[in-house]
Length: 171
Image (tube, rainbow, N blue to C red; front, side, top):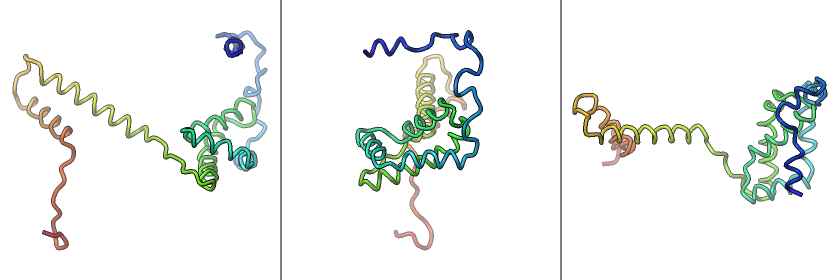
């Protein structure tokens, strides 16, 4: 059964052979006002059975971001609203679901900070490249290599904590 579902999808380029404006998302949206889109989703999500199922998903380890994104993308694909309206409504849906799930006594995990993760990964790449460069035999010791060594040492040690100073500092 799972295999048959994999082959029920359109082949690449099939949309180019079909009649234009044949899909729901190619038509004008049914709801143009963001307030209408918000009301639509809040009414659908305010169902206790829906909240129970989403609560179970969060307890199983899911985060709210993909749940919210899947919810509004279904509306886009069905021609209910535009992608822009879905993206505007997403933070409202996120807060509504978070409050409803926490009201069930389940803590909602914080979303990953992808920006911080990307910055940390970039710094790790820099340290790896800089360390590899400094380990080469053909690198001359000069002001540039001294600066790179200092940068690597500073990043590996982490930020130095300074002792508090001033009138209120305890010594």
